Length: 136
Image (cartoon, rainbow, N blue to C red; front, top):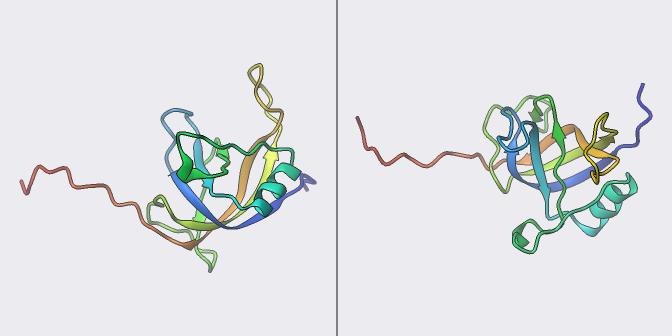
């Protein structure tokens, strides 16, 4: 049984969810946990993880991007897998921990965030825009 500390972040805003297919830039499953509250930031920093902000992305506020080699299965409040594609602005409760990377590039953090459980509390489904080709 793991003794790695865990924190529960409530009602976090999700962005750029690559939960069932890998992100093309990182080649990992990942999601941005955005607009973290000061309390959430304190919990995350208590795990020894760094919070990010970006001047060119103020809509993200304080954020963190957990990544995984394995798909991240979003659950509904009843514990059932969510089949819809999770869109930006979806709210979720996230059980978070960290792992120690076996190989890390120079300057990379010593700990990396990872999601143990992601429960959707308010789903905004991603629906791709129509291609504009009309009915064929």
